[in-house]
Image (tube, rainbow, N blue to C red; front, side):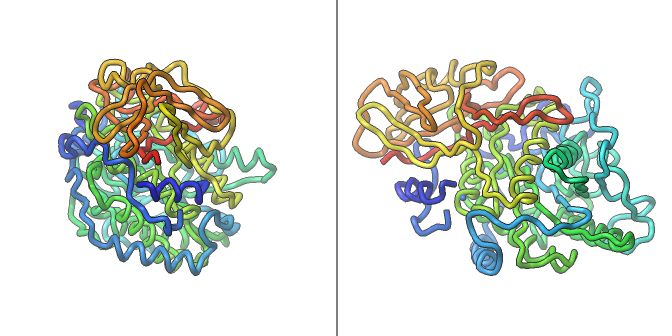
Length: 505
């Protein structure tokens, strides 16, 4: 844990039954484990049933392939554009985005009668693959029935059963059209004549990340995600060439984590998935293997639900971006968005806001080649009873959300004045008297002096006894001043601080 502080400084950085993406499978988490292990030598950074069944095989993603994935990632980085940033994508005519994950990737609960699907028209030239009358599987990218059509929601017909893999894997409005349109709007506002993305979504509601991996067993109900992504990429590359155009995949988007909330291998498993795509896609699309295809992801905050519990997957989703900068980017949390009554799935407007945030990061990393990092901690220090956390702030200044309710007002009350911050001495909660922003730092004043060792500081990591109204179980109030206003949602979208836990030296 002490190594993490050094590492960070070096980095700079669905059914209608009200179920949960991880159900009870995650357990209560480990209190006071302090964030993450890591050596200082790391590279340091009304629709169908997508709901209650997302418990899936909670926490059971398995660890196979993790070590191989890490080795593969090192080989890719050595051959590619290096750690820390990354070159912009080549200038393809159609830039592919492959979405994968569990129910939040496929619009879980985004088809309720009271929540009509948005993004039903395409204001630009963005695309998706149409299967026409093709039967899939078998995955034949040369099938003459395949074509490209304007990108609108829903991406395909709404699924009516669970579990249900590609192509019947869509449960409502996804983030894809909002993401695509925001990308085009941002790039055109910067002077480009156009920017066309071709969006694919292969996620499977309720499934652990093992089901999304290369080589997953394909059945009638699960395991098609990776094969389907290769199929869509090959089909889009062929259709582009037939029009005298080029196609390459610009990013993988992983929206996942609830089913693997307790998995100790989740970071390694995400790395394996990214590495597989990096190795396999160039051979399918013809894009240069030396260009690093980034993976964008966001944190989950819904599982497990036991009061005071933490999620290993949420920590891993932050840490993987620190460990693999430029390759895998944590775009931030989702706790600030609006949720349906199961506290796990987003309302349609906030699926759109999620897509618009993915778009902003996509433009920074893929279009412009910038070294984008979320609002994240880079160091922690203390003096007496005061802990100071320094942050990387994408768009200063820092500020507090004044619309969301205070976290920990009814449970974990020692932290009721922390605005989302949490302090532990071992496994004992340390009362917080107040928090104060100063530049790019937050000073956390504790009610008592701190012990010499064993102190951790966290933020938005511990579940409240009850979710916030219209929200989920974990949240905080710290955000930056990013002026992003969604083209589709018409709502502001600043960067909120990632959920984290780390040692205080």
